[in-house]
Structures are given as C-alpha cells and as structure tokens.
Image (cartoon, rainbow, N blue to C red; front, side, top):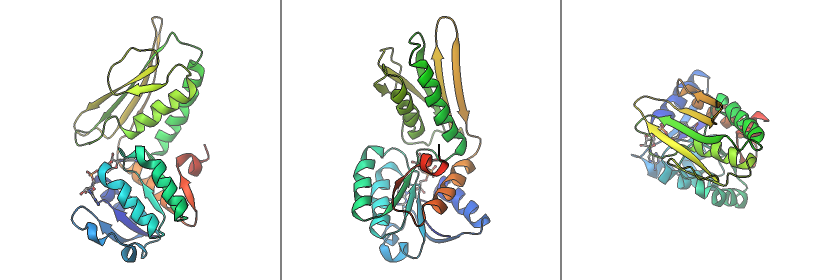
Length: 238
Ligand SMILES: NC(=O)c1ccc[n+]([C@@H]2O[C@H](COP(=O)([O-])OP(=O)(O)OC[C@H]3O[C@@H](n4cnc5c(N)ncnc54)[C@H](O)[C@@H]3O)[C@@H](O)[C@H]2O)c1
C-alpha cells in the first residue's frame, strides 16, 4: 500500500522502517518543517495516511486527510476531547478515520482484561483502585491516552467510579492515575486493587515501539475501502 506519513518523529520513523520492510511504499512525509506539503494533491497520491504528531496538531492533520478523501489512521494522544467533532466531520465528508490510544495488540488484550477484572470488582468495594503509568521523559501529555482508556474501562464496569484525576486521591468515586516519567521507558501501565487482606495487580510493559507501529500498519491496511470511524475493537473483533 502507498502510505502518507504525517509526523516523522520516533513513531513516524519506526512505521516507515517497518512499512518498507513489509513491501509498502511511503509517498509523502510531513513533519514540522514542511506543513505546507500537507495538501489534497500530495495526500491523494497515497491510499492511506498514518498520523503520529503532537496533541496540538493532530486534529487539523486528520481533518485535512478526511477532506482530501484519504483514509487516516491516527495514534497521536492528548487531543481526544475533540474526537466527537472529528467523527462528525468524518460523516460529513463520508471519510474513514481510525483512532487508537494504543496500537499494541498486547495492550488491547490488556484493555479487555481490565474491563473483565473491573466487572468482577464492581461487587467488591473493599478494594481501593489505583492506576499507574510510566513513560519516557519526552512524553508531552499526562496521563497517557492508554491510561485514560483504562480508566474509562473501569468506569464503564464499576458503578461507584465516575471520574479519574491525575494525582493521588482517596475519594470513593475517583480513580487516581499516577503518572511517572523515567528516561527510556517505552510504556508501562499497571492497575492495582488493594485491600487490607490482599492486593491484586495487572500490568502491561511495552519493550519496544515496534508493537505500536505494527498495529498502526495493520490498521492502515484494514481501513482502506471502509467508511466511518473505527478503533481497535472493530479491527480485532474483541
Ligand atoms: N497510539 C499509540 O499506540 C502511540 C504509541 C506511541 C506514541 N503515541 C503518541 O504519538 C505521538 C507521537 O509520538 P512520537 O513518540 O513519535 O513523538 P515525537 O515527538 O518523536 O514525534 C512527533 C513528530 O511530530 C512532528 N510534528 C509536530 N508538529 C507537526 C505538524 N504540525 N505536522 C507534522 N508533524 C508535526 C514533530 O516534528 C516530530 O517529528 C504522541 O502523541 C505519542 O503520545 C501513540
């Protein structure tokens, strides 16, 4: 497939390397130095766009792809409060948009496990919940998009939990998310259920960025020819 890469940082470069190894081609690379090249004429030379940039630029980048009629896969985190707005634009332009806060297959299994565990914990209020995420020091947003998805998964299963905050908090309705930034950590997420009698913990540790790149390329192949707004659940059938 012919790919337009938007964002040529750690993820953009990892995706380019893996895509070329898989026999795909990259017809366009957009980074902070050439935003003017992100136009319909250039985009339409690709079959699909993959966007990994920054929270402040993701919305407009994705919108340009939708307006150009090019399906777009985005992994940029930290802009998700505008996702609904984008989905409306996707409908207006009859476009195709795929978003995942985390493209790793293992993390998506972890999301399903998280909801399953939370479902059982709904009737066990003696356990206090805490979510912890650790990433490299260059990560701009906190908490991570993955941690927010995990918190949302817990809130959908545990009636008492109605909100999360990005700090320690002991209120019954709150899920505290503790964010740590440590050099070179690719991404660790842990959910702790603690009681006076015992603790229960589930944890996912990413070893390389390649898991994210692999999932994003798979999503790019999957979305070609489709219309609408999609996520990993649609692709993986969870
Ligand atoms: N969903 C996932 O699975 C997943 C995995 C890893 C990272 N991420 C997220 O993806 C994003 C990128 O991560 P990264 O590690 O590659 O970051 P990075 O800082 O290494 O790269 C971001 C790149 O975007 C470029 N950029 C900035 N503004 C731009 C613009 N307006 N147009 C085009 N390019 C622009 C920067 O120059 C930089 O090269 C972050 O939001 C990160 O949290 C998501």
